Image (cartoon, rainbow, N blue to C red; front, side, top):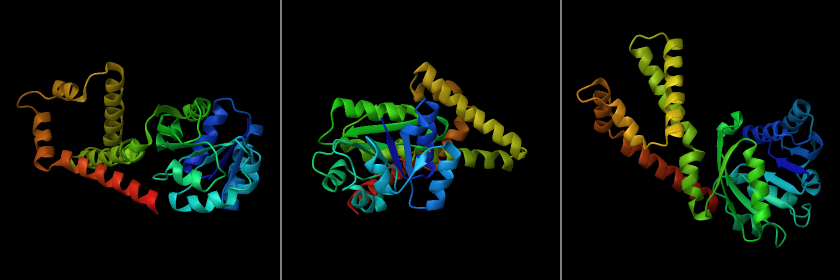
Length: 265
């Protein structure tokens, strides 16, 4: 089965490389990008065929749209007459609903909406998917197989996708922000930057591993580290005084709202 990826940015390339690592043949993968030089670069790097949006869409059973939300209508206009009858369309654009895509493609086109995230670059992605009006179980399984090449997949009702965007879609940036602040804190306290970097990165990796492997609630794990009158409780008090938890909640609400706005543009 031939898969066309339209959009050769960071996520498009991550998906392409993941599919190749998962054993998909080069001959079954097509790539397109509005930047001709970028399309040629990816073609040379991975040994896949490229073409215009229309060309690759006309040759594929599955068309994956990895484009910016504001470019979606233009891309759909370009491929609507080229797409094969019954071809599955998978969209990775934030905020864009399945109904929006269905309305701009031939009647009956099956559409799956996906919210991925950038850890897909190292096969540790988290993607949430939902089906459009014309999808079957087989279509969802096809999307799941494709996305599992770069990480984990969950199914959600479409009404939750804006919240998913705020949590896992944008979430890596929140973690990077915290890591950046902790490294700067280490430097401020006198640690060499390379030492602070290693301390913080391994702390984050270790904490995430504990959460995954023990299944314990984060509150329980936090309390295990927080001795009465100790250093950790002194630090956490500062977080509470500066309303860090409230800031996180407000940030995620803002991300959700922006996702909704993108879907209405």
